Length: 75
Image (cartoon, rainbow, N blue to C red; front, top):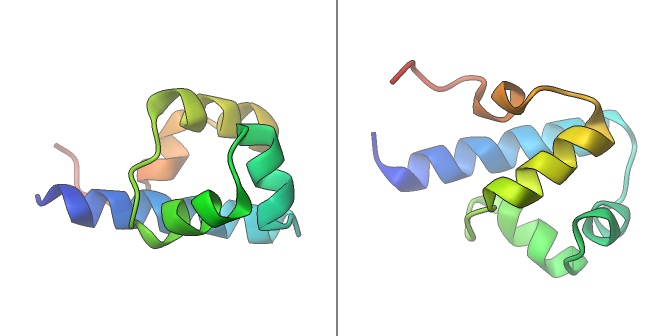
């Protein structure tokens, strides 16, 4: 599977959880210590989110890391 496809799916799942919790991109960015513009890039899959940022998102969203890979075939 192409890396870009994975980055897009992870970003979609990040956006889904943020919107589900009615959280702004700015609030998520503050928690991840990035700008809201960077959050936009993560959510579109334009930029790859690091493992440490995903870990922080898990703490904020109270979810397992596997959530972000939901919808991808098993490797």
